[in-house]
Length: 110
Image (cartoon, rainbow, N blue to C red; front, side, top):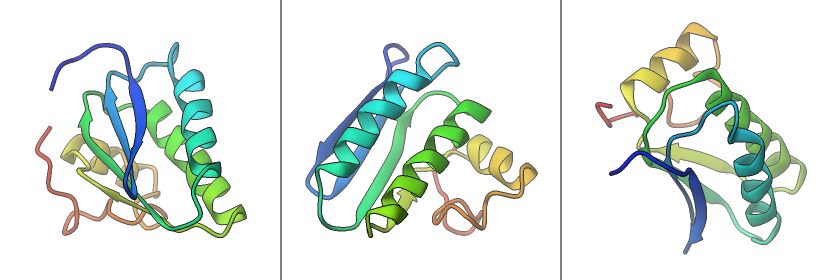
């Protein structure tokens, strides 16, 4: 996994997020993810294994995606959640709202 330009892409039934998400790049990435979410008709897994950063803007983006998915009848779940991002979600009392963020379900060490 390399740091760099953040990306989101759709592969099968997964939304794959990679790279370094910053306050400067999060809006573009959020919009790209929303476009991809609107293009599917079934439930999605958001794969965060390639994500380099654990930042509050990432949580904000994921909550936006989750809200959009809910509005369109899609269920999002998350995998590859780093321990740092899971801790940040727990500190913000968001770990119960993001399926896959509970310590027993997140596995990635970064």
